[in-house]
Each structure stands twice: as structure tokens, then as C-alpha cells.
Amino acid sequence: MYLPFESLPGHSRIWIYQSSRTFSSTEKKQLSAGLKELCEQWSAHGTPLHTSFTVEFDQFVIMAVDEQQHGASGCSIDGSVRYLKSLQNELGLDFFDRSEIAFLHNDKISLYPLTELKSLFESRTLSPDTITFNNLVNTKDEWTADWKQPVRSSWVARYLPKTAVAG
Image (tube, rainbow, N blue to C red; front, side):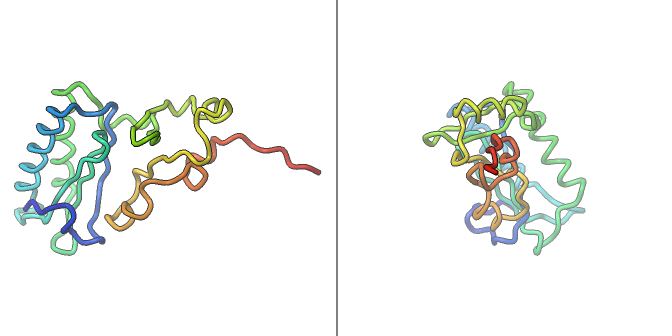
């Protein structure tokens, strides 16, 4: 059962899918229509789930289920993944590549390969204050509070240059 994203409670479980590129306006409409249909049909062992989604920065799909109403099963989660895989093939994008990390620059998303982060910080293309995303948050409340983080407060901080300790 589809519900507006803002109406789902903060304890709702979420899954974040980062696209390999931004969606065009046509793709976003197609994606939203398909996700709404998926949410309308999403069930676990025959029981409709209270579900929703939001599309953020034309590059992230956040899916949510209020598991206090009824928990999502492995099969129901697999169904949402199958839908996204079919969509990525149709649109020529990738929701499952974890080798590129997203950063927010002037309200636009930039993706950089994980292997280049250290040099991007050394060249000051990225800084400790650059916003990155924690796509591993588990609930809507965590998403609201901790999804967007400055690099210095995120797991990406391990790629920051080490400063020499005066001694």
C-alpha cells in the first residue's frame, strides 16, 4: 500500500539506491510512476506493506516500509531489487555500483571513484567540509538526521590527508 513518504513514521526501514547518473525529467516521471505501482503491490507473504519512496537530487531512490505494521520479507525486498535492476537496464544506469561516492556541490551531485578520493582531497577538489551521503542509514529518522554529512564526520574521512604531528 503506497503512502506519501512524509506520512511514514520515523522508525520506517529504508533502503537507499544511488544512481550512476542523474535522471532526466522524463526518466524521473517514469521512475516515480513505476515505484508508486511497486509500492501499491508490495506485500510480504500476502500482506500489503505500508510503503513509500522519494527521489532525491534526481539521483537517489529512497524506499521505505513501516515494519511496525508488517515487516518486509526477503522475498518482498528481492522484488523491489528486481524492479530496480530491470529499470536500470531499461534506462542505462546503475543502482548497485558502490565504487563511486556521491558528494554535494552547490545543490548538485558529483560522483567520484573511490580509488581517487585521496588525491581529490590532496588537490583540494574535495574538503573535510564537503557533504557526502551515508547510504547505509536504516530508518527514516536516521536518514533525516544523518544521511547528508560533512566528510570529516563520515566514513570517507579515512581518505583525508594525515596532518603531521608536531613533536
